Image 1 (cartoon, rainbow, N blue to C red):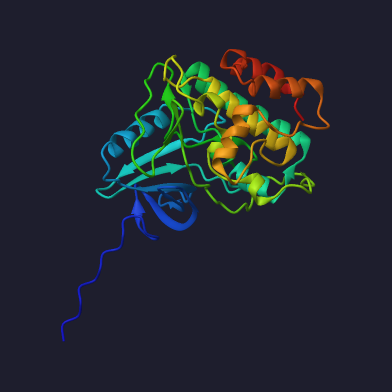
Image 2 (image 1 turned 45 degrees about the vertical axis):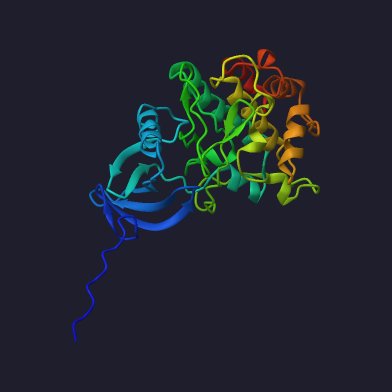
Length: 320
């Protein structure tokens, strides 16, 4: 009896060799990708490999090439480095630094960082964002806890540049299901958390989470970070993304780091949108006046009143 022919393993399965790296177990999941631990065949170095199956939708290849081009151009201590890109007929592979502590989302779900750690993390994120805005003229457009990874030394690194746009780049038209959704005149990415379990790495002192905090108040995704101008009726001004949208999200991060919960939360999306548009959130408590000024500067409802990243960076020493 003739045996059935062996089935070739998938190119992104465990044990496969990609660009000199042997793929290991899955350590995280993204909306359209899996992240695997991998080992360099030559040096034994441990890295992370983001495996993205090629999409058939119109424009998918262009979007992937755009993200790769942006990510490849970045080099900063608070940006997740991209070591290599490998392309197969069915999967794109992005070799990056392994961040064993996971994302800020994972860390925050485990407990609220001590104020000193929260201040240090915030300053690192601000410096990474300042590099993007001032040196690269890039708007990230998806700043959130899930997209800030923490490496083994406890250093925060901004990740995920799939939504990033240059300041003079026109807004892409929203596409079909699974891609950024239109809200007002901008887009908000309905993304999935990179659920990496925190493991080895820097130990952070923690504060007790407020008793009122629930799972609903720490929901993943991008809508809780969306600036009000992305959610209201289309204005008569330019539809191009602006840096102020990142600054609003930075204010949401600051609030979360200090309070252990997001400022704008609701399981019913239309009500959540109304809270963001109305600036309705519980005020910060037990923080100094300078920190409050930073928060109010980041969460200013009018774009014209919102701080720029240089001003946030110069004032951020007082957080913590």
